[in-house]
Every structure is written in C-alpha cells, then in structure tokens.
Length: 279
Length: 279
Image 1 (cartoon, rainbow over the protein chains, first blue to last red):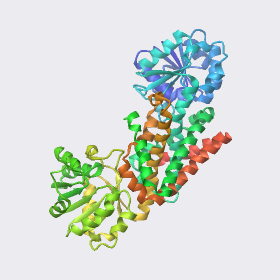
Image 2: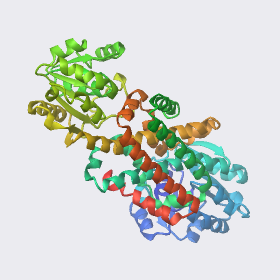
Image 3: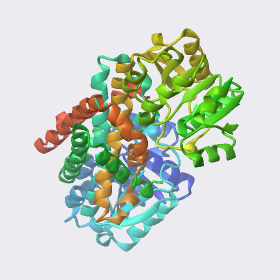
Image 4: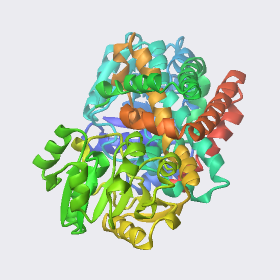
C-alpha cells in the first residue's frame, strides 16, 4: 500500500521503518515542515521519497498524520480537504480537541483517530527505530465515525506493527492518558528541576544518581515542543490528575511531619499494588 | 578473605555472589534474622554456611552489615562489641543516625561506613543477582574516623565489585541521597497511588500504561520495610526536598491554570538540562 507519512519524526519515522519491513507499505512518501528532517529520512532510507503535502496525498492510498498535536489542529482539516477515497490515520496523543477540529468535516469518515502508546523520551527522525511498537497498545477512538474500510485498514496496519488494539471514546482516552502518560511527564520534569536547582551548588550530586533516579527522571528529557501542545489540549484533565498527585504527595509530607511512620508504611504498601499492574 | 555477611538480602546476597566470584572472599558466612532467607541463600549456594551473629563474626576476617537501617542502629554497636581486629563495613542508605549510634564506641575505628548506590526496587535474597554493582558509585563516609587498613579493605572490596569510589561526610551524604534517591521513591510511590485510586473505577487504565509510565512508577514496587526506616532517619532532609518538589509541581499547576504555555515550555526546556547529567 502506497503510504504518505506527514511528520517524519520519532513516531512517523519508526512507523515507516516497520511498515516497509513488514511489507504493509510498498512505498513510503515523506512530508515534513522541516526540510532537514526529510533529508535525513531520505539519507537513512526511512522514506522512499520526499514530497509536498499536496503531492504526497495525491500519490498515496493511505495517509498517516504523525505531527505534534498543535500542528494537527490545522493540518487535519487541510488533509481531509485533499483526500478522495484514501484512508487518513492520525496518531496524536490527545483526542478531544483534535477530533472537534474535524467533527463537521465532510470527509470525517475517511479519518481514523488512533494513539499508538509507544512514544519514548526521544523525538525527531534521529529517534526513528525499528520495532518501536511491537507488543504495545494502540487506542482507536470514535471508530463509529470512521468508514468501516478505513478502520479495517488502520487495524491491519497496527497489527502489521505487532500492536494490540483497544477502543475508547475521545474523552475517556484523554482522561486515561492524563493518568498513565501525561502526569508521569510532569512528575518527571518537576523532579529533574528540583534536583537541577540543588546541583547549582553541588556539582557532585549526579555522581550518586542511582538507576532508580535515572528511571524516574527519564521522561524529563522529552521535547517541550511536543509536550506543550499536549498539555494545552488536555489541560483540564491533566490539572485534575496533577491536583490529585499533589494531594497524595502532601499526604506523604504530612505523615513525615507528624512522624507517623506506621501510616507511611501502610501508604507505601498500598503503592506496592502497582506490581499487579506492571509486573 | 573470610567474610561474614549480616543481612543476606538484595545487597548482602548480591555482594556475596560477586565477592566469591571475584576471589575477594574465600568463604561467605551468612547471618540473618530470617531463617528462611538463610536457607534460600544456602540452597542457592550464595553463602557457604549459615551462622549465628556471634559465630559468624568470630570466624570472619571481614564483617559486612547489610540490613535495613533501623536494624543497624541496634546491630552495629553489638557487632563492634564482638569484633577484635576485624574490619566491619556497613552499607546503609542513611548515615547521620547510624554513625551517631556508634560515635562513642571504643571500636568505632574498625567500622567503615559505606553506601553502594546500587539498589533496585527489588529486595530480599530472591533479588540477589551477579554484577549488581559494576560501574556504579560507592560513597565512603567519615573515612577519617576509620583505621587506614579498614578503609583500604573496604576500597579493595568495592574495586573487586567494579565500583567507583567517592567520599562525603555523613550529613552531605544524607542531603545528596535525599535528592538523588529518596525523593524519587516518594514521587514514584505517590504516582502509583494517584493512578491506583483512579483504577478502582476504570479497570482498563493499565492496558494503556506506556513504558514511560512504567519507568516513573518502577520504584513504587520498593519494600516499605526497607524504606520506612530510611524516611524515619532522613526525615528532615527528605522533607526539605519534598517541599521543593511540591513547590515545583505547584508551579506547573499554576502555569496550567493561567494557561501560560510559553512559561510551561520554558520550564520543560530547563528540565531537559538533565540530559547533561544522565545522557
């Protein structure tokens, strides 16, 4: 299947590699606002050729939009304007705002809204790698608003990437991702800032950073260009979870102040329940 | 060197494996308050024999104390009562309280206070693994209060484990570990609780947990039995860092409320500086 990927970054580039490798795509046409990214994608042979938005869409049977979510708000209506019978698939990390932007579009039925939960702290075409998606989940949102053949194409694509599929409505998606992805990023960014502030005085501090510390601040390496629009679009739900998280941290604080170590022990034992979920 | 390890858990057991493997220890004598742990250590051949505290110390040239830090407060004076010319080495995650407990002991000079920064979220003899320490840092604290031969033995031991060495006074150690280890654990415990609370209503939520989420909550699997005494002993310094962390999170919250996404972007770009430290 001739595939046009708009946004040849971490997700778009990694998809290109696996779609070509698995035989799902016969040709990958890359479209990107950044000529350097396209150039790198060509040189690494991640895409077969570069094109403009119009050319790329005209030549493809399948269009994948994998840009940051702020760009999607403008781009998705434009892409739908340009398609005929092709399938369009978007991979954004938020859904309510994005889907509101195309809700009334006459070609809304050609779009399948998806979120492959496979990103890492890296971004850009430099971070495109094979096998990024295998074994992970993709959410398909508001599938009833997409044509059946379009949903089937999206499902086959994600199966070709080795992914498992689940369905959610747009709102539930945004609540869930606020809990299992967005808050982790804020927590990690904040932890990095807390320690970096201290490090101004104490150069030595990072020598001692344990692998546990590295694990909790790993997401603080994530791109602000990608995450600012995610937080903008999912602001209300992220704020709810952030409030809850600050409340739980304040509980730890209050138990430490009161020296109630029995309750503190109990709280940590409750947190251990996470082992059930993430063995 | 005949070595007695008191506390055959994650750290003690992993040390036993590498000390034997590297030839540093000719024999490992295990001492543990929990008979099942000793039994497992024997069956896995991690220790050569099990003994009582008194027997173990009497037969060894080197004594390693690797228990949780609450047990150390009582155990270390007792161990120093029992040693003659042997070297005693402790591996606790806190230092001020522990070293205060033996500051006036007539055998204080035989004790070397160390902290191999190599723990993981796992605990117990089941989590004893080879090569846990290689490439990581050990802090030696208050080295001037230990005999020179004792410090040399400790240094050779950690070099045999492949570790790098650094020195700090007890207070600086406790401040640094509050920043690069203890706060990460609280953050992770709190994040797990935040999401587990939500999960009561939404069974599906963990399907979507990304590898980023798993990374930030990994430490929430840590043992409350080990961490309660650490937080008890390092309470004041942990509280300072926790206050700072809550302040930074509140800054994120306030920027989201004000919809000041420019500042939010800038804050995340600052957090990216962590790449310099943890590439």
